[in-house]
Length: 116
Image 1: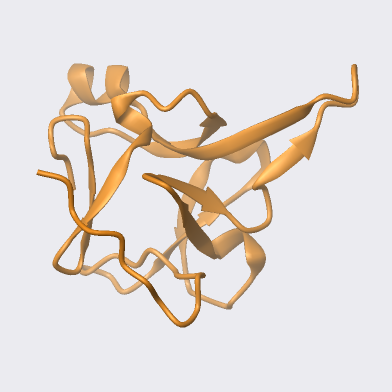
Image 2 (image 1 turned 45 degrees about the horizontal axis):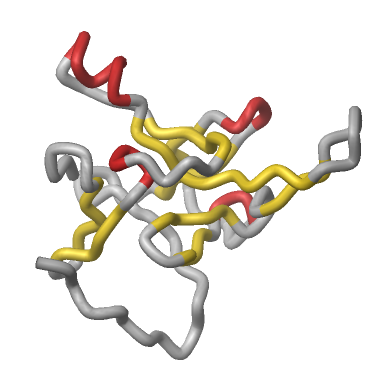
């Protein structure tokens, strides 16, 4: 069952950890770290359909051929399968189930195995 699209007054949001109160922040190399929220663009996300984009790194231009590169939040499913814990990071948009997310109550859930 697909969830309805949620309309917000502000399209931007932060992804915060319930356990520690810190926010996801995209760092150099498009990795994600957990940090104190300071309102930086690297900490702010928004929905693009069922994908989640980062405000700072939403679309980049390839310096080699000037093509545009779409980046979205991705769950590293091979990492999850190997360790039972999967990191998230920004990756090229391909809309695989590990890049599709939904909002269930107050939690963001990955379509890949309904991981939270």
